[in-house]
Length: 229
Ligand SMILES: [Zn+2]
Image (cartoon, rainbow, N blue to C red; front, side):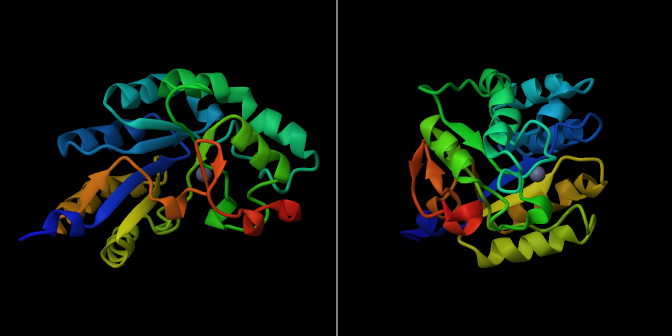
């Protein structure tokens, strides 16, 4: 049927807050078994724990994208007392580590960054004007989402919730967590559900979820920025 391919719903899979030994390994196995690619938004403290770096390297070697998800995931850029210090501590501090894993630099490849939105809440604590300027100046692509099934709260029910979102949204950017909640035990069921919907799993991100693309501000971040920057 003409146009069928173009009409196929798209899904971009992202895994935040890892890598976590004992969890990310199984996530990678489940993705590999189905020849599916994803993006891992990694946290610096997770990378530095035993086995963390090896898992991130394995993910990159298996064709997944690696993105920056802050150094410690403890501070929100728009809620920090000293916003410049927060940028230095949470973004700059692990920039070289992420670049090495992702094969990126300020001039090569596409640097991916996802902010820490505590509890998934998108409000003015997510960014500071300083952070937005930094991400622009250092040519980041900032990746948000439109499907947050809250796997950390509902470790089994998230699958149905995510599949319902995917059925409703033309191009879903799904946020899951390769963290030790037990939720990722249900990842194979989710991936099989996606296959049953004939969803195309892609590695790119739709404009609607990308407020900054390679350093260029695509749409206003004032609703997510402390001080309205
Ligand atoms: Zn996170």
